[in-house]
Length: 84
Image (cartoon, rainbow, N blue to C red; front, side):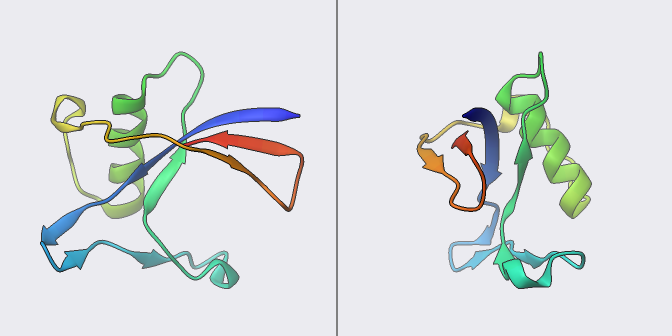
């Protein structure tokens, strides 16, 4: 089974507003938060900073990001485990 490390960003403008978007290429996924795969030799802060820029256009320095937790998720659609 393949294991991938993923990052997810919960970006708040105000306590009651979180950044979500619909992915144009995958509308069936529905609303989602910013996130993606950690590349080889990349730490989670740099991966998340890169994903935030790619998906939202926001520039957030890796030092401003804090890990708040992690979970293991087994994908149902493929033989893959995600450490998020």
